[in-house]
Picture 1 (cartoon, rainbow, N blue to C red):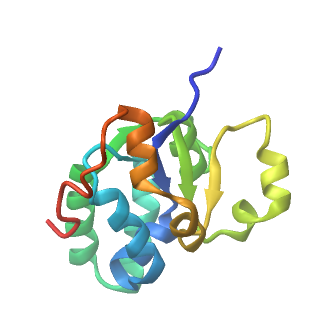
Picture 2 (cartoon, helix red, strand yellow):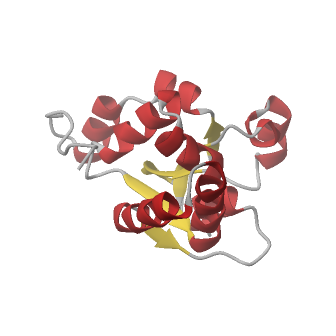
Picture 3 (cartoon, rainbow, N blue to C red):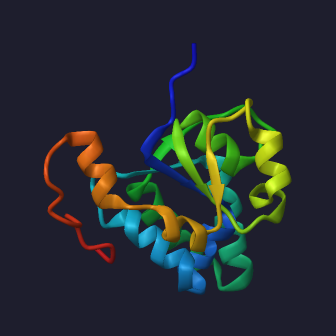
Length: 157
């Protein structure tokens, strides 16, 4: 019997992690929602962080990529998965995440959703789609059965 995914647990694909740092926009907004709540976990494997770090180094520079890696390792929960697995999808699966944020059309398409159904219990969405449906207040109240007081930390610290 498998553990059901945790609705307060999110994985972000390498493209979203890099866009958060380098571009901003919906990727940053979505990850800010996660960073703003101590009770929401961001999960990531070493291969996933390796991929994102390589993108950042290629598009910016090695020093920024190294600094980013230090920060993201402190801000995320590390998970392991078998070599060769898709890093974002495997991080979500092995981290019991209910959500995977990705810009990859191969993961976010309706056909991919049908293919994943029954294999992996994870909702794969673009950051924009995640922002449109994710409601921290109702999730918090459903998990803790207490009133939501809003974000409890600064996403920039």
